[in-house]
Image 1 (spheres, rainbow, N blue to C red):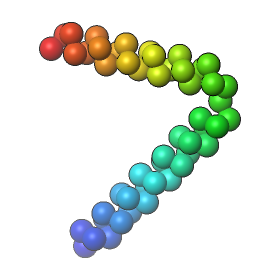
Image 2: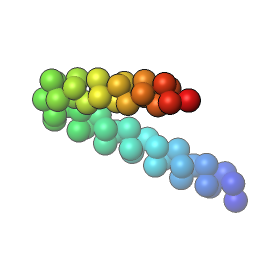
Image 3: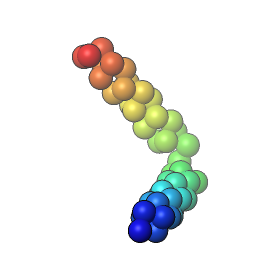
Image 4: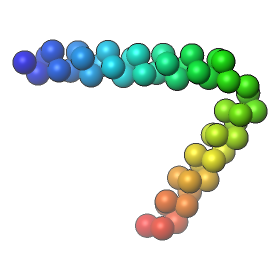
Length: 50
């Protein structure tokens, strides 16, 4: 039943983003900012390697 699988995937995705929001609210701002910069830097280096 593909509908059930899609529903479960959507639910998992939703709870995952809720969990990330929860963590983001608890974490100090500067920490999430540095993590974001690190993520961008990693994405840039991956782009350069291609």
